[in-house]
Picture 1 (cartoon, one colour):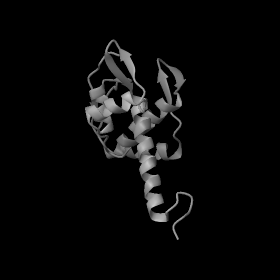
Picture 2: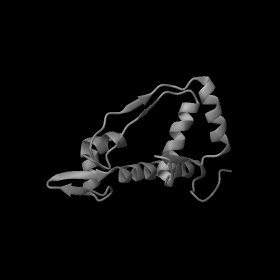
Picture 3: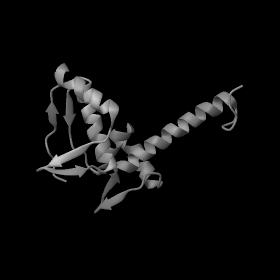
Picture 4: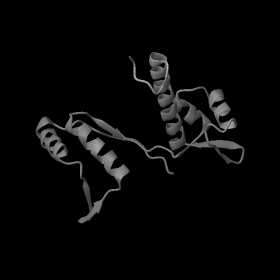
Length: 140
């Protein structure tokens, strides 16, 4: 992937933001026109565009940047908020899938994000278990 510089956009003035906010409140269906041809966006792209438009309609400035799909161990550790050595242990144990490019490890961004979600679920389940004594019983 070719790295591109991030692009920033200033906040919209209120007279432009308000109509966009109303339109987004009525529908999240976004159609993009390229050279006069309508293109329906895939769900993930649509969600990103709607999020961008929502932020602009809320009066926020925005910045768009590209992210790599395959991360170095340093990038993955930073994304996960863990040390580089702990991340290597996770890959060695098979907890995080890893691909090798020669002798260099590469980790998919989606795998790091899935691992983070699983850690959050485990933490939430642990909190419920601590309160109730059992993950299946509601607090009394």
